Amino acid sequence: MSALVKEQTKPTLNKRPKWQKMGPFGYIVLALVTFLSLFPFYWMFIVASNGTDEISKIPPTLLPGPRFFTVVSHVYEALPQFNQALLNTVYVGTIVAVAQVFFSAIAGFAFAKLNFRGQKFMVLFVILTMMLPSQLGIIPLYMLMGNLGFIDSLNALIIPALVTAFGVFWMRQVIDAQVPNELLESASIDGAGVFRVYWSLVLPIIAQSSFVLGLFSFLATWNDFLWPLLVLQTPEHFTAQVAVNQLKSSYAIDYALNMGGAFLSTAPLIVLFIFVGRRLVRGVMDGAVKG
Amino acid sequence: MSQTAVSRKTNKPASPWKPAKPPKKLNNPNAVLSLNGKWGYLFTAPFFVMFLIFGLAPIIYSVYIAFFNWDALGTQEFIGIQNFVELVADDRFWNALLNTIDIWLLSTIPMLILSIGLAAILHNPHLRGSTFWRTILLVPNITSVLAIAIVFGQLFGRDFGMVNLIIGALGFEHVDFIQGTTSSHIAIATMIVWRWTGYNALIFLAAMLAIPGELYESAALDGANKWKQFIYVTLPSLRNTITFVLIVGTIGGLQVFAEPLILGGSYNGGDSGQFSTLTLFLFDQAFVAYKWGYAAAVGIMITVIVAIVSLINFVITRRLAGDGK
Image 1 (cartoon, rainbow over the protein chains, first blue to last red):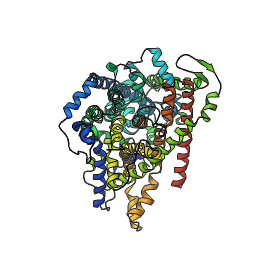
Image 2: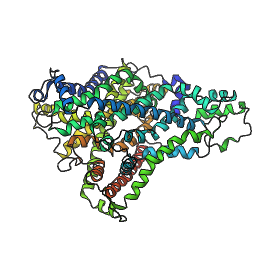
Image 3: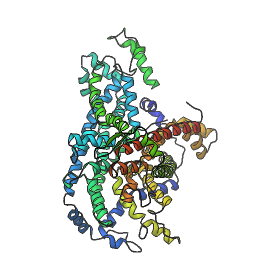
Image 4: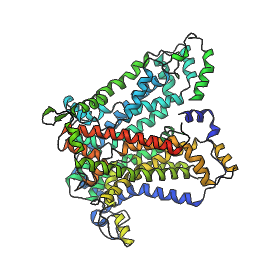
């Protein structure tokens, strides 16, 4: 964190050494990494557009085939609720993302900028809770969902995910690093109350970081797999991941069908990533522990 | 932090509204004192209330039922530490533990080396298109484990998987990745490495960018070549970051379950449990065998193991990096 502060007060420290040369080796490695990073997506589409038979021969096809829409229609035959599953995922992901940003930002603000008794202990508590394996409480949580009547309901995915210790901690770091105390001080001398200061000064400054946190929450919710698999039962309530898994379990290994489902559940993320990828990269790097 | 503290100190006399406040008794030394701190309770309350109900209470209850013979049908019989005694004698538990550690090692070590290497390449100021490369690095991380495990499962297939076609073309026998112990661990570790290398490379890159350029310049003046600069300037500066990545990787790595679950298609972790992991074993006991008390005991063991390994990581990276602090 100290490095983060320094970086902002003294941007010259960030200057990279000028005397290094960039040889072809680096580009070859990066090209290889790019290939390896993207190939599984390409392969998903190849298998889904060729069908299992075309893939199960030597040498296998490496080019897109004509059967993509046939395979997609098979996916919808096997699971007519697939669109519903995508909508469910967007619904849960959006609510969770908005709620996490809202609760994390305001709690992070309190931890970063307000002075109240027990503050230190509470921050320590937040950090410690991040270290606990998430599976530790999963059985009682499942029982609790049963008592609340949330089994086979999207509420089981939404309610326990509204707040996370990670989000609060992240927002505290962001506010500590990005919001200057002087600004808040002068506003409060002029008579602005705590909430007013938060709303009209802090929030605009952290808007970018809040967006990034929201995106990560959305992605995590989209990709969450085990908990939805445990609590959801009827296809109307499935999320995209559970739907794809359903394709896997209800048929003998049909790679085209599986990869068709995987492709349909991944494509929205890839499209989203094309628009927000650069911001996510910045978010990851801003949140890094430096030095 | 030090700089912020300094600026705050110099600010103190210029704050006329609370001149008598003794600074040493602050709960939050970075706070803006002109703001009423009492609001802090209200602002953090939603987090604490929700966390207590859906986070902490289940964990405490989990510890409670670990001392019971407790199943989904309603049996609730206090049996003391019997679950733990049984667990320590359970071959499936030790098998899962060894598999987990093996997968963790097979994934963590290559991931760490590759991500630091990639970060070093991206750190080069003459690199063109750095934004593009950085963005590509994050692509594997945003995809679902499920989709990727389906693809890798096919790529590692025995008869027609791409990996085996290449192995065959090189003149070797096809490997049955799923059936073998080490080979299935390699397949799972590959998925983890694929997913996390780029993400961690970005973390390391951010840390490298924060290293003062003067350190490199003076090292260059002393005649250090690129490699020596990397060893003597870059690596020591990454000490905290390596610790951080290792600990986060350990917490995640010791809980690995999604990849083996999808690869095997059940909570067994393969026909002979060859890639059963601790968390997979927990789920098997909780949601297939419905032995909730026993599964809760497994969860506690996982937590203890994560804590121990994290501590070891912490100590070792400190030692290796030298010069303490």
